[in-house]
Amino acid sequence: MSEAIYMRKATLNDLDTVMEIVENARALLKADGSEQWQGEDGYPTRLTFQMDIEGGCCWLLMYGNEIVGTATLMTQGDAHYMHIVNGQWNRPGHPFATIHRVAISGKYRGKHFANYIMSHMITLAYDAGVRNFRIATHDKNDRVHNLVQNFGFVKWGQVYTGPTDRDLRNVYELNLD
Image 1 (tube, rainbow, N blue to C red):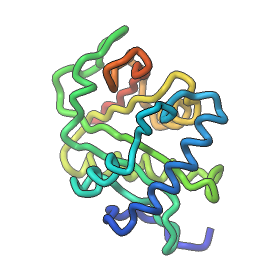
Image 2 (image 1 turned 120 degrees about the vertical axis):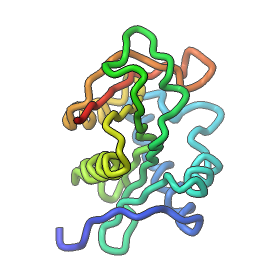
Image 3 (image 1 turned 180 degrees about the vertical axis):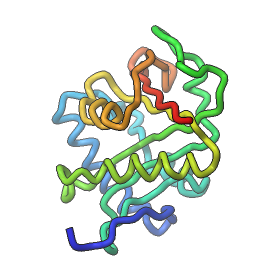
Image 4 (image 1 turned 90 degrees about the vertical axis):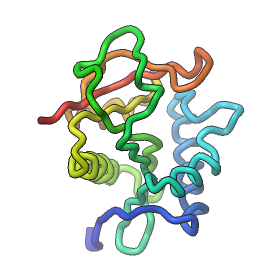
């Protein structure tokens, strides 16, 4: 690699590119046999990312001047993660950040760019004083399961990210001092 690799906050001008990356990731998930991001509601939608951008929590992974990935970091946690089923959190009641909607451009898949995203998301939240991190993923999303386990996240149970049984996700937590 011969270009700078860094992250920056997304702007509304980036929304079309973000959606291209997400649609490519959606197709990959489907090919992998995962139901994640395959629902009739189209989640995550353009509005989802617009709200992430307007809320200042959507980040872009850059390789030189090219957007190669995206992720959302919520340093104030997420209400969906308050109630865990089939397990319990390692540090219940402690403040936590959540990492959502990680996607890499198909053009750059296999080059371990997701590692840069995870490292940066953890660093940003850590710098803001957060020491506990949570992430949820579909049972068949082996890519994310492997990614988070490589970063030391531990599976603690499951959460519902929506109102139906199809919204049950495996959840992981990383605790730092």
